[in-house]
Image (cartoon, rainbow, N blue to C red; front, side):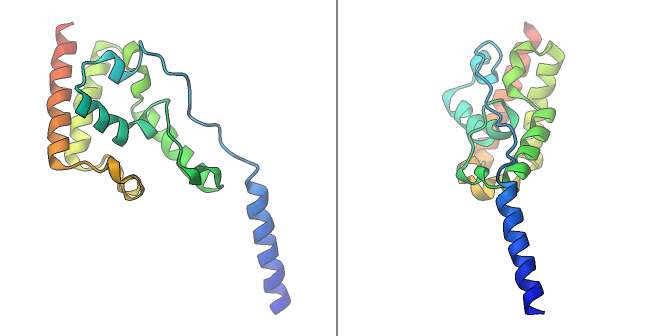
Length: 154
């Protein structure tokens, strides 16, 4: 019995070593100043910092990867979250969005913040600076509403 456990543990360890060679592609495309939400919009510095710290890792083409992203299968889990996040919202393509899509993005931003569904709790547990206070949420909502009105008038 002990011999079987030993071989199982050795097999598991070997498997963990092998999967380290299979890393997902990084989400680090070049920044296009004509497309990025914070470079195209008129976000005040405080609001821009909140969006960068709470949204950009999963909702842009500019993920700032933590050290543990080099460990599989954690890297796969993170990449899955980033891919899903960018499907819902990618602030790196804001400049090329149509008027209606920009307005929807800005309205949705406030809605998910007020509902407490973003940023994800699993994200804020590790990234303490991404946690938003009620004051932060209000500032983001005021800005997003003003920005939506500005887009409407364009």
